[in-house]
Length: 254
Image 1 (cartoon, rainbow, N blue to C red):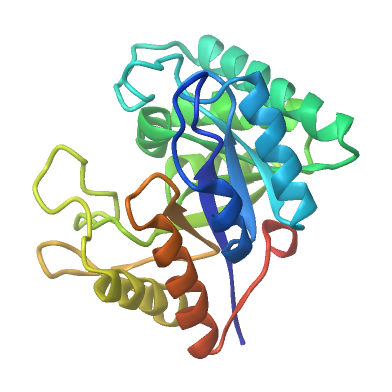
Image 2 (cartoon, rainbow, N blue to C red):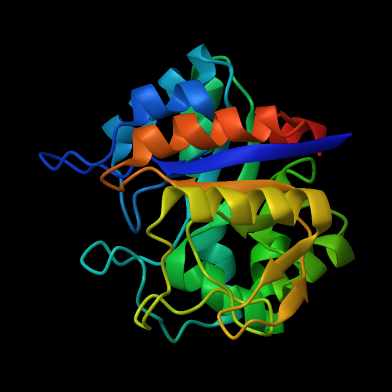
């Protein structure tokens, strides 16, 4: 039996700027990663998105990132492990408050953008993030790039972890995501993206841009909620996973 979590980055609107179709996409996913105000989102958006997710029975997670609204958290920052620890605790605490106030429970934590990619390779940064999650709530699940330093750090400190794979991204020979600034970093064809995901779940393999077969573990699949066809893609991938005998369950069951 194959089982996987389907997660989506959400709550990325800010003030007068409206981004994504969160309410509709929530019908097709099992985990929502809600921006915590640093790379996107604001208090009202956080509160509203958490309420929508909880109402639909979707697991809620804190999507923590660098304090970079202008760059959407996708620009690398020279940050110390102590600073990484502090901003991670701060952002988890912000979303935790909204979730608790609504009678819900925070399920997981996932770094965003540059913070995510840097932690995938940097042991010191990944350990600071993992420690922050553990100190806030050791029962939280830490999402990280499959097989990355972040996953290893989470395991070392005693957290439950979820190896994450991406539906719409290509991979390097080392199993890392192709940088967004490079050509062919994103998979534009829906069928191609879905077929890649199904293979990662069922076979534990992904083909890199150079044609190399790379071992990969897929506990949770990320789809992006800010794309032009995000809703259609979410509906399609949900349907195709089920048609291929893959059960979709939230991070609670990992």
